[in-house]
Amino acid sequence: MSFVDRVRTQKLLSFTLMLFTLSIGIVLGTLISSGVKAAKDNSQAPGATPLVIPSPVELSNAFTQIAKQVEPSVVNISVTYPARPARSRASSRRQSNPDDGDNSGGMDDFLRRFINPFGGDGPEMQGNEGKALGSGVVVDAAGYILTNNHVVDKAARLQVRFPGDSNEYEAKVVGTDVATDLAVIRVEGKHNLTPVKIGNSDAVQVGDWAMAIGSPFGFDATVTAGIISAKERRMNEDQSMQFQHFLQTDAAINPGNSGGPLLNMRGEVIGINTAIASRTGGYQGIGFALPINTAAAVYNEIIKTGKVTRGSIGIGFIRSDDPRAQAALKASGANEGAFIVDVTAGGPAEKAGIQKGDVIVAIGGKTIHEGDELINTVTSTPVGNSLAVTVLRDGKRENYKVVVGNMAQIFPEEFGGSERNEQSKPEATVMSFGMTIVPLTDRLRESMDLKEKGGVRVQEVEPNSFADDLHLVSGDVILSIGYVDKGTPVTQTVSSVEDVKRVQALLKPGDSVKLHIMRRESPRSNNWFSEYEAGVVPNTAR
Image (cartoon, rainbow, N blue to C red; front, side, top):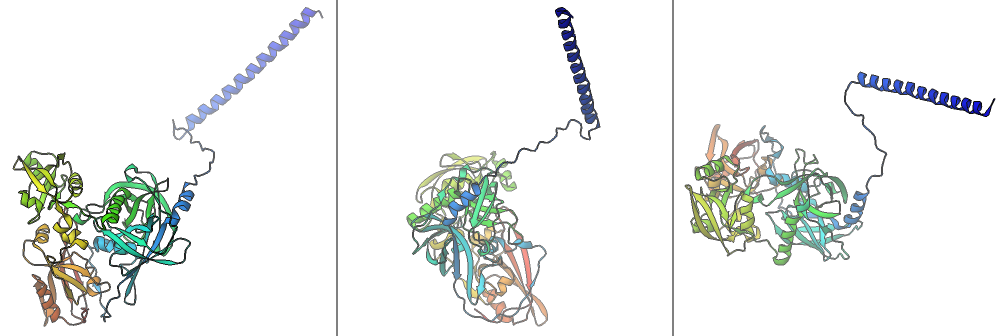
């Protein structure tokens, strides 16, 4: 075979091999394409894209680092309440009201459950002494600790325990603020304290990770994690809680967590754990922490003066989304503002000429869209300074100059605390029902829409007493008492403290009694009545 023939033969073989390979590729491609098309044609979800599982990666150890960093700063606070005089107590029962549910005790009952390490209603009673546990967080190496006011309120003794230290250290209250439910205490005898880092709660966003550390049910340094569920959450609209706009979290918070820190992923405190929403008294995924920006402002004023002073002009108002406010705004030709429903007698607003029914649309040169702007402006203005207030009245704009007063003096019942004017405060009367009562003030009666004169207000309820069995709480108003006199049912309208005394003197152990009370849930909601009936009356006074 010549050289030319060999080249031709080699080219022919190469061409044949290429043709064969190409044919095989075409056949395979056709089969695969047909199979895929068949699979798509047979799919139960046409157009769906399969999910892809990523390669496993190592989870962040941020929670571990934060726990190690912050745990030394979180303390357990043991609270001892004053011993009560010994008293005999007859057995009693409460006839349940199907409408009162688990929240019949209101916020006071709610917070009592929150600090009790056993989840019950109020402190654990040991003999005549009350015991409870709470949490706190070290914010200054000099021994200053931030916690909740309801943790230390009325405590006879405070003892603080630190992680890894079996000793208990005595602590004293530096100052408290009822309006934000905060307290500053100082521990003695403990050195080398580690303060926490303070964050900025204004930077918090819904969905951010959050960690809580505290002593739920007495278990020290318990760490839980979750997210920020909501911001600016209000528990209710009661005037005494108008400064409590909470961060809501689903990090597990339980009784005993109160006063402990809520942290961000940088290990900074963004809130002070304050309350839970729960039908059982335990964790149900809804916890509330006071933003640290609010807490820091309160702390700074307490360590400077020992108290918090806020300005007030002596009014009660409802926000523009309330139907009454909307009607007033429409009549005045405005779309937004604060509708005044109450003007305190003798207060700054009344002295300046502002009236009930006016709509505040501007104050201090700032437009009022909602009540929060009004609150922030007034409370931050030094007492004694003047503010320009613009109101709408009968469709006309009126301007007034109002001198800001001290909120604790203008509203002593809600914000008085240590500033309460003892001379103007009604004298409390101790009743053998296990409560103290005071006459109802005209201002409170008007704010509760009580048309008739009379009624007495419950100032304090003794734990484990007859009044406590009825689930009475501080702030309840007793309107009438029902009892049986010689086989005849009698209803005694309560117009004064003396009326309660008179009925109490007629009763003997075993007599049935019914208290008709009024409990104000919120200035924005309709007042509602609750009736309770019990089978036995205690036979000894405190």
